[in-house]
Length: 397
Image 1 (cartoon, rainbow, N blue to C red):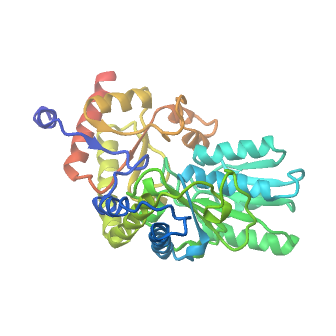
Image 2: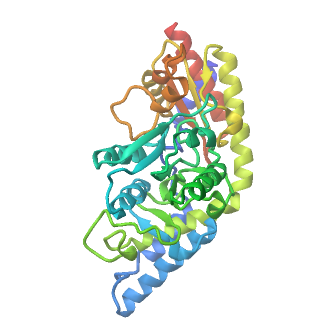
Image 3: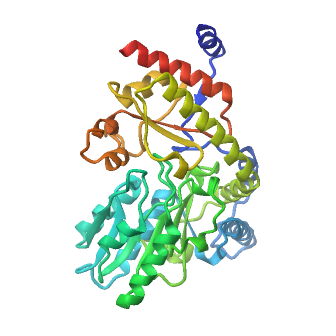
């Protein structure tokens, strides 16, 4: 064990296991961006330089849309996944004649960029119902149906949770919503935060049954600083940023052609390697889970790995805070998270808290660490992580 530790320290090699927070940008995406960075025109300008920039932007939009099985005209570029979520939720709210009497549904394990939007919906006068997952981490159609009302106008459920990786049955929830619509002669907007699910799930967006879907390039090995929103048909969204007519008037500001091109390139590369990479990282994730639970018997896996994305493992270890372990692992050259990086200042995971409720397992929420694997993860990295983490836990007992 000491020889392995000495080897890593001597090489000063860091192990990055926080791909769920931000993935490194692929070399192919960087090369694509360097090419389009040379375009000087504004895509909204009518001169030759502007036309060239517009052509590159539209090409990127078409390539991304093709990957997800949607139409290019249904894809709106935004500055981030968070911005896309805000446009979907708040943009829909602003399109309504009145918020009075409207009912909204969201699950309790959503990313903060969704959760904060629904807190704003409540401030705007809407009524929000929060749906908790079952013990596996799944938001069941039955749980959503239990809170549906005739006045329900909007439902948001993430495709796969970013902390525990659980894949949600969106198509089943969508079918339940359609039945409710037919019964009450209403219309419900169904939104999903796509997150990292497309990295390993080949399901096309149309087959999910959603009307709005938010994307983030930085979750898919693309450049940071760009996202997108899928808008099915005429959703009547209103802009949340004013000042221009870009992106059908839904998001003002000159589009970043280079970032869009990098996003498209990353998507194309993702599709080429999706199947083989899913198999590879699942083997590593399962090996990590097995080795950790064997060396640390008190460790608890959060969520059902059989229903999860193949690269995420969330565990809780009693008696040691997740924050301490994350910092200690970082000191040893290993990057992990305790929860969503966007929840700065919180000491417990709201996702794991929702899984445990007020049971005797409630301690798990403040003792979590999340390992998220990626293209650069090797088996020797997993072995080193187990050695270091086991040593840290033993030293604290």
